[in-house]
Image 1: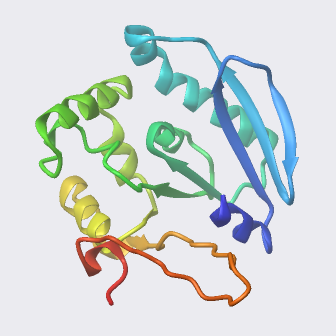
Image 2: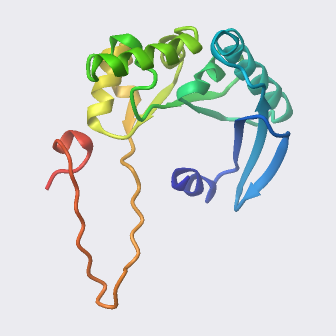
Length: 192
């Protein structure tokens, strides 16, 4: 959310959000306009059959109502947005973890790969195609940048690292804090 708030300081930011159940809703969060679209309570095969087309249809309808779109950003399960034909729009994928890697993700244990494969099946194994349609990929570490490049054969120059934002407020009158950080190393974004 900090990322979107920062973007909204100098840009019009509109979010199209999909929720399970509920109603069509338009709300304002500061400078960010959020349009919520409900989707049916699909499970298993129904989700696999309908999800991609649902995302594509909703994004197409949204873009028709908002002809001045310049960028479409999508993450994980909404990458089908990139299959829409929206003239003169740059596509930016936000990939922060392995949700789009499927069974061939040798970076996690087998039981996790099975779960990733189920997610990929829900999206009809189209994540790689959608990612390669991107004009840019934003990720959260050099480690993920290299992983995305290797897994999807996506041009490394088009993968940008945006390290996670951290907001810290003082908890005591002295203003000093003790901060613990656990990492495998500089590949996750910080080197001490």
